[in-house]
Image 1: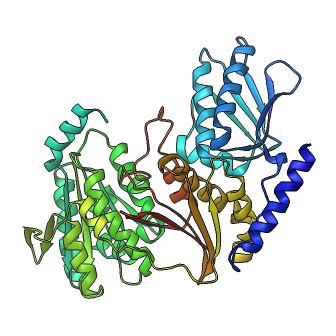
Image 2: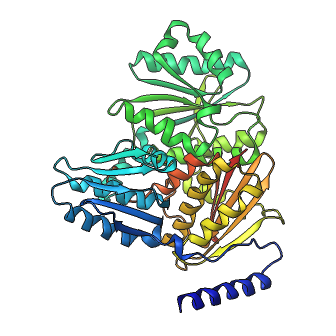
Image 3: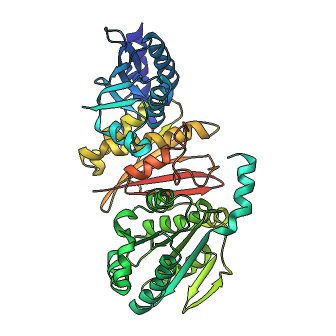
Length: 136
Length: 318
């Protein structure tokens, strides 16, 4: 069913492209592989961020961070960012805010943060409290 | 800002001094800027000079030993993108010396600025009045009347409440409030070239927008190492469209230009806060950082705020 839907969407895309202007760029439909997820990574307090965190994923990120903070009890929260292929400034603000809310000396650790994420955090927040950034 | 804070800002709006110095030749530059710096140092104020390097050298030798108490920054480096000057240079210096009156020479406009840079620098000059209203600061902006075209001098009269020329100080008749000045700057923007690639977007799911940039930026001349910068910048601009327009729809155009890659995001929204992206939001604010980051990641950001909509044109130099 999912396959059929996806195929139908591709066909629609082709139709739209053909109808579109000559100069219109080729853009594939957004693939399901990019959808954002926050998943438990196994050990307690450790999670994986997967896909692309943009404004459409903001609610899922916020809720995921809140439950991760609760589930970690009094411990740190660690996020493995290996499979995070994009994060926007607003989602980065969610990470900074979640780190701050942990309090009591607890940390939000970003493991394998991309160079651009490290740069955005430094540019917009400097060294935010409670956040530990470990670059890729 | 609360109503009280806004009212307090209005009442204290006359504290801030923003003056243009019209000079003709090195001797007038050294005399006009030299007097400004010596007076400020005499009053015990922190002094910053952000100007093109040749003028820093000129002023440095005119000041002699007094120059060691002045912070100098090459404006052609820190102010190449005029959108970064308020947050990175002016506001940063004022914050560093919070509670004290700061005196700053800021020279963002010089002969040889590209037309796009020039336009952004005029917007910047106008927005200084808004960004610093009510703050204890004096900013002096030297204009080279011999080297600049008459239009640039006329613009300076519209963006500075006070003009200094030949030792005389007078209020500027043509001065315009920033909102009036900015809305008067040419609309519509020049058309993108025919060859520009186009994408319309209309949902909060911005994956098609990012796919468009990833796929097409390299062939528009952007080196692989800078694609991620443009990707983040365009995504932030499109996020603003999704957040701040009724329809959430906009369009993106991408093309290769002389010396770089240009990408614009256009929508039907109007900008509420003219200072968005110019002043860093508070540490706990969840909003207002998008435009700040766009200005950091791009080499130049042109903005058009019109009744018909908003255009953000992001330039990446290659």
